Amino acid sequence: MKKKTLFLVPAVMSLLLCSSPQKNSTGIVEVPSEKAAAALLHYTLPTFYITTCDRNARMGSLSLTLMYINNDDITWKIKLKIDEINDAIDGLLKGKQYNDLDSDEDVHKLINEIEKKINEILLTGELVSVRLENILID
Image (cartoon, rainbow, N blue to C red; front, side):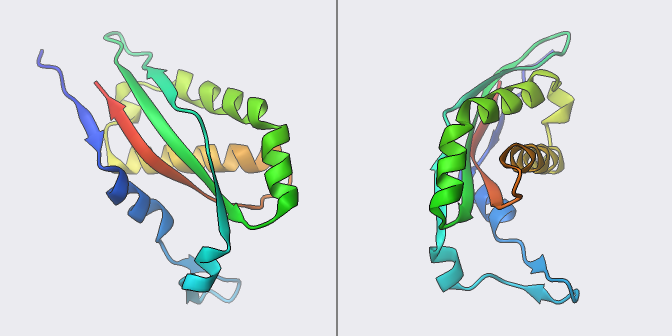
């Protein structure tokens, strides 16, 4: 069986994951302004290394950046709970098979799972998004 290599261009994935319009409570689509985007801070997590749990295990790596509104309290919470955040992401990745990561939709689902889990850890739901910087699975 021929080995497949999955490589998603970081810029394209970042664009797909971070530039999607958001609906407000009235259902109207809002696109964040440049000023609002400038008010966002980012926190780059260390690279996560993946070994899929398939019969033919594959190795890979995943790089993520947390995007959040400029707020010292959130920055402090992230730094305080960074070990718990890293453990939670590792836990989500450990149960993945190659089929769970081989399409854009699958990766988008994973990013949403990670974002939801981090917001649960921070208890405030103030994380704006999780940006995928790079994913490589061999």
